[in-house]
Image (cartoon, rainbow, N blue to C red; front, side, top):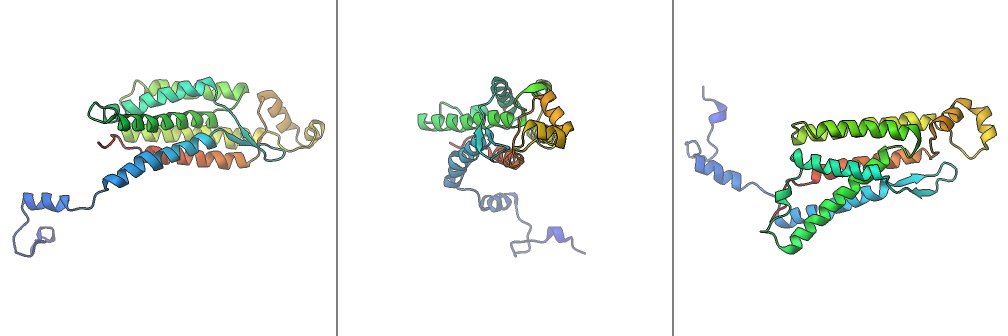
Length: 240
């Protein structure tokens, strides 16, 4: 009985040669130059700029007013270290983004794309690290410890993305599911809040936790998801 995997697809009774196989592979549809440029220089920066905007937004607990928080200095330090991890992990080949073979316009455009990546990374840390108090130092130290260890590990792109995804998921859970439920919200007076829920009011005072609307968690979840999508869409090398 003839093996089905050896059936000839050319119809002449002969198995395809290596040359014919290569020609068939070349005939497969590939993204055009315009599609690649559209993704790299329009869609990708738009995603990262959206993360940059959303990562600093909060909703006030009393009236759901928009509050924009600037990132702390430690967020810039963490973002710089993350860019180093992106390069060491193979997510970004810096030689494929800046080259003497590229035109000046393309080098500037590539620098702009990576700048949006840096800004989005900074705002992601701004989103995940608590604003002040003891939680700020605890979660900040966890980020520092993890990033510092990863700098000395031999990470490939998949391991790096898994590590980043797990780290961000844990930080999101800690801030918006655990700490947020320990925070007293609402527009009632402090005396009324003490009588209604003294435990939450005590944790809010001890941990110095800011009061935000629950909608903040949904907004920041969207920001983290867009950031991970942007990392997935980021090409390793820029096309010439």
